[in-house]
Length: 391
Length: 108
Ligand code: SF4
Ligand code: SF4
Image 1 (cartoon, rainbow over the protein chains, first blue to last red):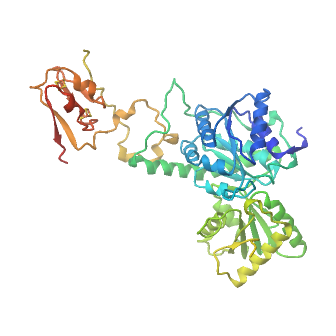
Image 2 (spheres, chains in turn yellow, purple; image 1 turned 30 degrees about the vertical axis):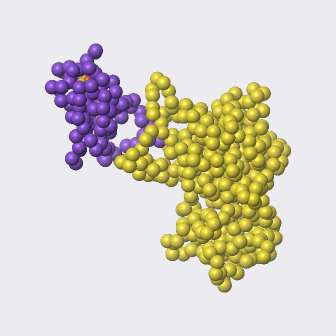
Image 3 (cartoon, rainbow over the protein chains, first blue to last red; image 1 turned 135 degrees about the vertical axis):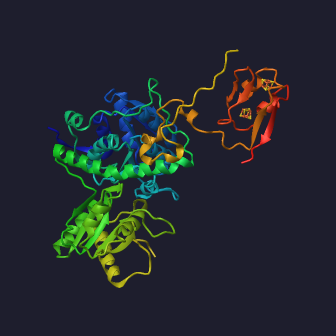
């Protein structure tokens, strides 16, 4: 029986990659992802993980090496953050278009300039159109569980897509939490060996990444879109199976005290933990507020989101990224788009906050919920609100 | 020289313009080696070589110089291009020592 122990989340994440019996790790260290790859390098060097560790000269090379490894049918893992994720940007599209199920942990971090090593979701949001499955986690246990799930989801014959697990830099990567690492035998049972259907193999040659003239490009992109949408069913199935095996259940939109709530707050990632405490306090004071946590970002869970907000009057969305010159945060604009055709829908108020590691405390969330509810009544002249900026 | 033979073009399952998104392999991989032979790559030339066998001395230079490898020996031992692949680059005409190849304008 697996037991709960105090582990740094990055170390536990590395251990989860080991439990998944990963074949290849190619990574370039960048704060705050460093502890993850350091731990993996150590596991490989000590012979505890029988994998090839490819130390590369950049994130662009890291992702390129991952493509090659995945293409021969190797279970492949990498991790990065911020500028590193941006440097591999063009290769990310190739992983998803060539249907190579690389798993990557992203230690969410702000983008320069000014240089910030601290957390927000600018990096995660900048890659939302790359065709990867994107899952956000809010604590160490969720990180471990979802890394294991990521391999099973991505490698499923019906999916064959790369998966990013987003965990907030520092506030998750560098904290020690009580975490249950599943037993090897349990993981072996849950996660079947990776069998890529069309691997690079001299005995049965295939051409990957060939030229796609105008007569075929649209068809290829549509096939990719249909595939990513259909991946949702497999994700749900995997989380269900995971729950049955390990007793911890996950879903695309998770709710906390949302029943009967007139005002809902929607968050992603580690700040959800603080938001939960704020909601608990407000509930204790008799306020009809609740929390939604968006776990699955790509494919976007349209049906689950609509279902979760249908009885609310106000929906407050917190974005930890800013789409400059646009409608505010990417999460809020997608939530609004998802609700546009609904006849009964809450008023949506968008906040952008928690940028570059700026913390939002429990009282901060209370303030945000109260202000959001008030703006829903009075109206606002802005497309979105910025939270916590000094005038 | 061994008789050069242009490989018979295997019939594609569907024409380019008829392929549905459902017909595409995972990741648009090509699983049949050499199937590029099915695709007409000679449709964007603006000039095409015309071979005058009466001038040709069968020296084979055009055959070796053609960057497309689309010149082959005819049953009579002359050389001719396959316009399905010929790009109209004019190298054959430039290299022919007997001026047996002229480049004609493509009219449509
Ligand atoms: S024009 Fe160019 S491509 Fe065409 S036959 Fe001559 S050398 Fe080959
Ligand atoms: S280069 Fe000219 S002469 Fe020589 S084989 Fe070709 S067409 Fe004939």
